Image (cartoon, rainbow, N blue to C red; front, side):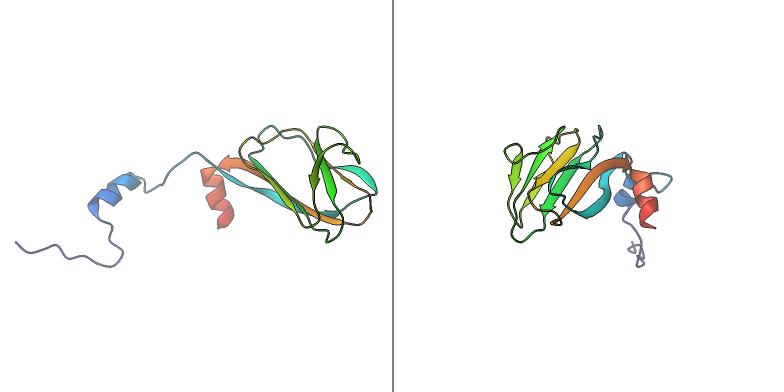
Length: 131
């Protein structure tokens, strides 16, 4: 018995069956970035990210080289209230992610920071966005 000729690009039978009759892959949702916000502080507290029920992750980077910042969920951050993010530090929420709005406090105006949040989108929409 002669072995079957295999050409480059052929899928083994078991893999072609896993792809399904239509040739589509898995469905469901994936988490993608809702965008990155680069901004600077005011002298005091300001809202940075609005509340969002479907938030899956959030990253805050204090891009100041010398000034600490404070973060608070759902209300203004103050000099004595909120999580401290040291100069050059990053905070990441990716397991139990607060859905409240995020506020940043800084004693000095004009200090840079960056925020990125992840939200779920249908798998097919994520593939279409990459094309």
